[in-house]
Image 1 (cartoon, rainbow, N blue to C red):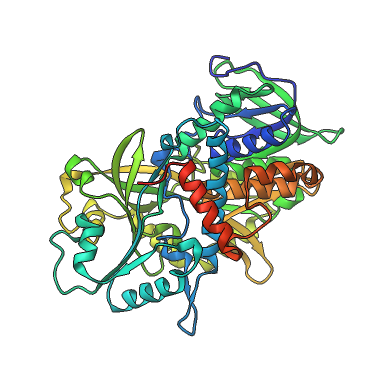
Image 2: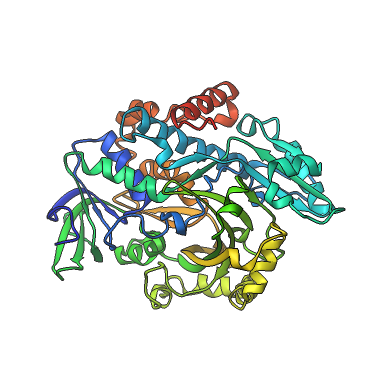
Length: 498
């Protein structure tokens, strides 16, 4: 049992699978709302937050639609649809409120250990893209959730905002950018460690690393019998749980399939791996402090939006550019090549074949990405950093993302690029499938799990939830005064004044 922190209980109230930000967030919510419940967290690796939540496997943008152009689409009449951007930003504000509560209650001592203010920018070139960005700015600038956003086509202003991007850029290009100071960089690996560290200090909460889930079956008493294996000793035992949450990143789908709940029928997964160029030159890193997002190539999936990112990881500033997509049949970075084929069954084969039929553009894009040379990757980088030198950058492999495939009455199956909570009818098991915006919206996603799986307890928990999330039950986009108050409050609590 060398990798486990405690002996495995034979019975528990809440069993969380996966030691990333989702399980850490849900565990924190449930422990705060019902401190007398026992909670056991099982992680396959020897430490928590080593897969999707790890800083090097996660963009860490603090997705709030301040710079991500794929959250604002153009309607047929030329107007800009900002509804998705408002929703994503609203969700991130919920996460900020949750983290602020943890800081105020002493569960997180120093918010700078996981969150840092970094300006968010959108950057485009070419007449058509500049026109789009201008109209996007006009649609967003007066909304309280996007207060403080600025727009410019002036090269001198752009040079102040992003000197590295503008240095030695050819003159005469039609350029535009938006800039907003309220953006953040979030180290979700560090956040997960902080949350789980605080949880482990609570009575009734236990973490078990180096433990793999082998099976999940419902017992005759309605509880879930979860068979776990201690990887360092080979010992296998069964834990009876009243509620099971599967927050295991890409591995959530095959684990959910083991439960046999009818709600999982029709769901499949499509794995996509990511790569980034990481800067090795301290002078180049120091010359840039912003997250600069561009526009995705025609035919490319939303998660491929190119961005030049300042990251704060373990107290060090670094610089990444990407992502470059890849393909692997693994559902986790440290998973098995058999993950994808093993996930295909009679219940989802129709959905998967329909998605394969309808997404040849994505298939072509992934093939092109896999076949890219370093010269191709550097060419893409030089659209953002004209002076980029090969010797200053190295290729690093990011985490695996498993996109949701779900049944569709008209098409047979559709590929979904968001996240989805799936739960049993009785709420005794829940799981999170999908990727972006993922970790940034962990708090609102886990509130959705609570609504779905703990409806009977919600009336008793309402007051505490409003203490943790002051906007709980309201929409900030409908209440400008509350929006401004909470933005100011969370900025102060999280020490985001730069």
